[in-house]
Image 1 (cartoon, one colour):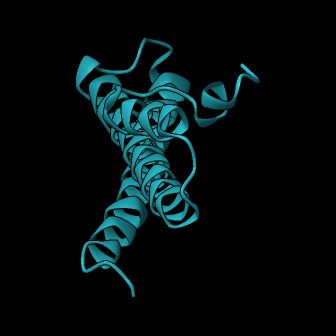
Image 2 (cartoon, one colour; image 1 turned 180 degrees about the vertical axis):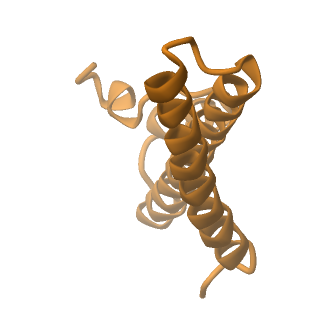
Length: 107
């Protein structure tokens, strides 16, 4: 099932790319014709849009990590796996931004 937030995220991504392109063009043209640094407002907009894109990617990665952990916890519970491994996945689920592979000793 598709999340109801997905279309909003897609629209946000598309608009962010459009804004980034337009502001980047304005800053470039300003530098090109005036031979002076672009206005701080344009630089700030480039920073804000870039940060927004990075944050969206980070949120999606966090969501995927949590879904991965939940699926594995459910599968382990069905297979009656040792509680140590289940506890490790639960800790990973609630720990902030830790890579998935580190739970299995590869990182």
